[in-house]
Length: 90
Length: 464
Image (cartoon, rainbow over all chains, first blue to last red; front, side):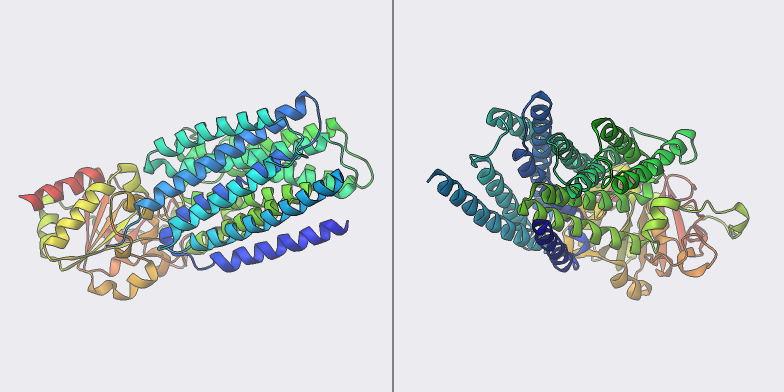
């Protein structure tokens, strides 16, 4: 159980850090921030790689998790980049 | 000896995870500033690449490497195709779709972990929570996708909506029940299957009653959920990079959700579970006065003599795809010596920052976009406020009429400008179903018709 206490600590600090870092975002960047954060949530891909167990069902689940997380990662980063490139100053 | 090397690999992997976490943190920080945003996004992509690569190289990985590569390959092709082909006007639904896929991935991760037979109660509880948040993120995002792309049209009052809303509450109750009994009875697969199904149906019920104008809040919230789901999956798999990255997303989604709710002066609970009270017809203040229509050539004459113009776009501009002609009109006005600004309300459109993206696509520089707080104090110096397909965000009832459902919502006070042009298809009320007294004001002129055609007409008048 000790490990969960430690990881819970990491989780809470990270949330706090996120709130501090992002609290003053100009509204111009609301969509890119959302879409860029969305790409980061594709980090579930890392989780999908370390799944355990044998058998057909486990393989199917891992494959599906990897595939959908990858769509999220590639699509999310590319579209954010495409969007940000359009923002120009006068 | 071999154990020793393996331990070292694990220590090395953790060092790389720390580096990746720092890159994620720096990336999201830089994403919040205009000058560094592109670089921030690249840094965060680099972090993702490093984290995935070092995980893949771990000899402890049990999943068949060919399956992994195949999955990544398929994901890369599908994701890139969608991202590069999509039109900028379809960005809201596409963000919803990608978000749903992230949720679905964590849903499968939790499912797989359940099959690996956890050895303590806490893990079971984590699995249930991760399944639920991931599943609701997925099916909720798919419904949001359907609503935003207008493929799914469903009334808030229809039987189907009510049915699914009920299922949502049932699923929530079932989740709580599951968590409460887990310490006493180890959940079996049949029990878990019920949770899987209820979760997916519940997610539909979570989003289905929420109307189009409230979509910015829902999208931000689902965005936050996908991060929280990833962070929980990290707890489950004892993986710290998942926890850090997931928490950052959870936090950023939460901030956007709060900003959106504040911009509507409503609580998040009210938006999600109540919606706008359909105002009883009696409470509508009898709109007296006449609507004064104007035609394109008269509007042109007024604009030509204006020295400052404020353009206020809303969802109607997105629907009419009028952003390019709007930019053209703006440029013509500027070359005519007029000062042109764009007043952007945070909840105009269907997602946070929707108008900003559309105008950026049309090459409007972002430093002429102003927020309500900055533009309201100087509104009486504006000669013409041009409202394009916006309604509730310029409704003076929000400041003048305490009985109105939208009373208290911060608005762009267009009615204080010397002249107001409202471009509108017809006299229908906005999303909130509230009549807009702005249309009846002394200084308001209605320019009826498709926004793109009307603005296009003004552009050709200027060119003559």
